[in-house]
Image (cartoon, rainbow, N blue to C red; front, side, top):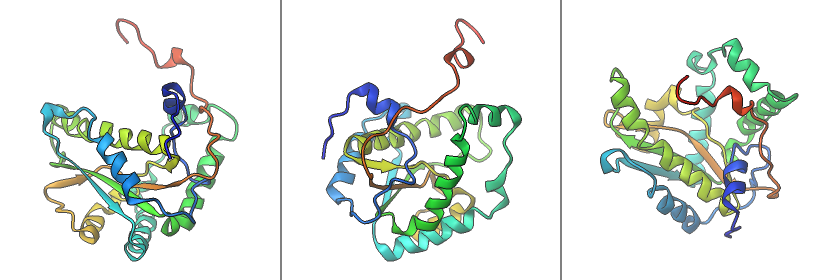
Length: 216
């Protein structure tokens, strides 16, 4: 279903959906393919088009990946404390982080029930490479993945960007047949229809704290 959302509404209300994922309604393959078709219209460094999207809907395979995702949250890498400045920004409005934490807990309990997972990947690994190489690689997959999420939102689907696969990226690669030495996973995105469509813009820190004219 194409909701025909205005561009400003689409951009300001596409964000993590956890509590309101419809766990009972399958997502048609054709709809996910439409989102991929739009995703690959995103910019890509030197037109290399090294992106890949692994979509998982098989219940048995989803269960395996859900268990891996939960296990990855116990890896120390997944629990790096936020600096004070990030905590201050994250708590820009009362109750924001409490909702985030309860949303993560909800996803933890119900991830295996989410009807589709999308794992955006890119050819090439960035470990030990210069910032230039890293930016070129990540810049060739992250815009495409965001375009996928925007396209999904316009079609009544909710998504949540997680990196829960990355602490155990090798194990996820093995489970999915992804050639780990040559292909890097960028995220793990659960996808489902949403319960209702009345999403609102989020509270963010003021523009004055992020906008710099003619220099820092």
